Length: 105
Image 1: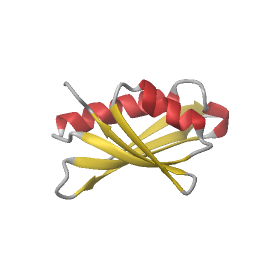
Image 2: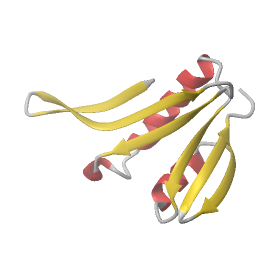
Image 3: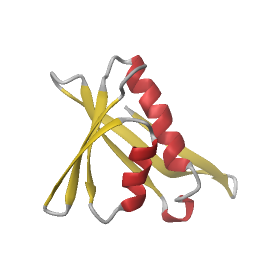
Image 4: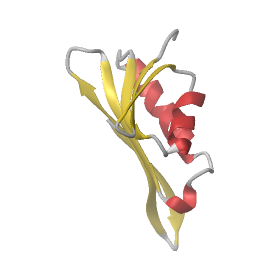
């Protein structure tokens, strides 16, 4: 599942963010990834994308997400933390392996 954030710029629609998940067979979970263009970061784009993708994942019967995040990528870690997931983190080799359960729906 992929969703895009776009803006209208000079009569063209421009993609400024992408949020996607890929289902991990047999786990009822999916690996999630988010990318937002630098000039649109810290403006709520990632939060909106992740919120909507979470809604779609829950509707599809998924129970959570997994992700790998570089240890120094504090904005991304904060994004996942503030989403309200039941979060498990494991740091290995400068990369956090995250397991995020949706909890109560």
